[in-house]
Length: 108
Length: 117
Image (cartoon, rainbow over all chains, first blue to last red; front, side, top):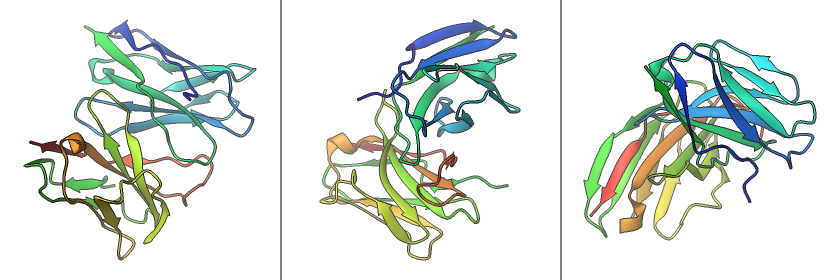
């Protein structure tokens, strides 16, 4: 059973913030929320992960709701190079299980 | 820091032939993973090594797939004999954390695209 639900596709204008939602209503207390992305013809790339606090790094910000049932990945100033499939994954210490993700297209 | 290296990048074979893929993880990374990614799907874990020991191979089709990491560094994944449904991208990843660590991150190579005719 899928642990996360993501929209299959999204568009975002170049230079704007891209906000990618993820629902994980059955998340357990010890499970992290991970985000990876996969640019065409490349392997997946780790972006960020968090447990319950919001997180920010040089690539993105992760906002997790207080009840932890959903989260949003924010790319603050999207560029054409951010066009990729974005995977939201919920896990504790077990293996990464990828769904089909959200295909984000940055529009010039 | 050099990333995960994989070779070859592309391979085309006939069904029932054998094929091998090679992976060199990031230096010092203890844990190594092989994934299979079929077109239109997310990657699926085939096997996980910690150093030179297998941690999880529950999704590896052992009748035709094998993998090894003899010295705890490089790894090879072999398919013998290949079937049409093995056409996919084979991804190698490594992690500096031990297998099963909470909050671990994985670094992926570019993958090998296998086409079985």
